[in-house]
Image (cartoon, one colour):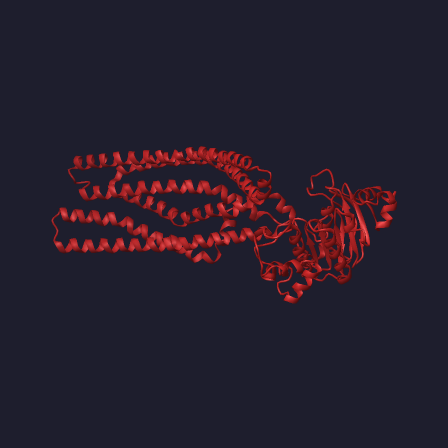
Length: 580
């Protein structure tokens, strides 16, 4: 896990190395100060002259200034390294998510990925900064001060050798109990964020059904659940503070007591006032170091689970890969399904799609009808290799989709979903997702084909109109037409409309199909629809049922031979009696 996280340091290696180096300098100077101070006290006690005192004073000022300078530089380098590390880690996480296939994305919820990219990365960043700075300073000072205490105080320093192990065992006990709790807390944190995400995305539904009170109650319960778990963890971690104070107070009582007894017993021959002052200073440094170690322990305990969750994403390998020698050209838009079966989970007993054999010639228009759960969307997702088939194979342009470079294949297969997504930006910027280099004339032509040009130009700002996040300021039908135009700008060999005209009126739907038929004769068009009118003029119509192609043929052939198609057509038209 540490090796994986360290891979995100990259260009921040120098600052990461300089931080502990300057910290070593700060600790070395700071730990030498009490020794010089003790020498100064002994010199004053012996009746030295003012010149020696000034020299000692100048040395102390120089060392203190050097220690402060090292501390400032260490802090600056730590901040720079920490911020750079967090930036790289977020980039690595985001890039990994972008490489995921649909099956990988199904493994993680959206809210969980957002939490890992934000809260978890922040926790790991804080731990990283603490490790390269405070986690270097505290142990170094602890070891240095203990060594000097033993050198100065002899057996008196055994007090530290008793208190430090007690504290260490206490911290290990807390860590063992706290880690499972943090694991549970982070999972509930994901659920809390998921509740917020669903509520914000579905705000219009919440308002229209007057469910604000219900949503507030649901969020309150989730928030209370997280609070209770965090409270239990914090109560456990709170034991760390009294344990730390107990160790400090034991040292603060025993060290002056034992030191004073040693001075009195020896008459100042084995230990003098300067040594007492030095030993007390070192004891305070030891205690402060122990306190800082306990703080590091708490931070690392919290960030440990965050780090595990981040590495879980980074270690997840995409289920889809490019072949060793990929095909980089799609010859045409022909599609073949050869004995294709598919299930989303390899351990599933039932196939989502089974025994599909199908040939679609290039340039054909294919309509797909079927009820909810009939695997219409599953079928078209295999064409652009969003999933790999479980059995059989899918060919595009006569080549198995597994043999293509995935980027090349997906650039030639444009999919317009029913739930379309627009991004914040102008209309033109959204359209150029299809082709970043598209000219204004190409934008207008694509929008005319998608029947979007008229409503775009009806707005005063036209193609420079700003689209709010998610397309909140355009209607569902307008959003669908913009997404169709965006797909057309890709100049695909295959265009798939997954119920993407459901929000437009029948007249506009007919105009879109007419434009496709007249202006895009060479593009293979696959139209998933609920309305028979949207597909009845297609060259081939597929009727899906329970993950299988129940029937295929033209409109007239299916009316004559397929009961499902006939029932759908009859229910949607007023010509039922004529059909009968």
